Image (cartoon, rainbow, N blue to C red; front, side):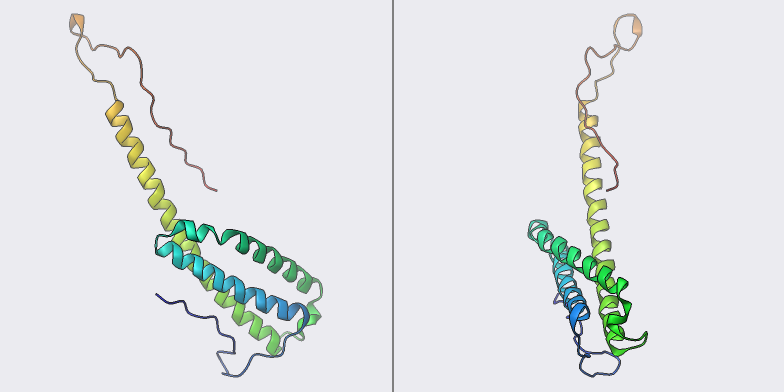
Length: 161
């Protein structure tokens, strides 16, 4: 399934994006790069290629740190993007909305894969416990025999990260 490229022009007006300079240009560039990287990672996860997706984590962490730093700069200096309804702000808002969409899709696939993995671990643990369960039998005096030693069982942790 091919990725939908992030729009590099205004979707509403079908005109070229406004001229961006300084932190605004950097924010737009980082937003586009993050969008493409997260969309690629999501696609790899959908294709069941987690090792290839994991290789993107270093780049993704670096881009997220730069994005956060640029956003902090722009929050301190709000006037760098012009007035509230400027074309620059509208363009960056459109880019950010697209990034949010791809992040929601990414979160959904991560949660789905996590629940599948937890289900597999749980079912394996239950099977091990069932196979290692001591056989209950009657001993002397028509009472159940107590198991001599207990075998090791699997440990299941339910921790949300």
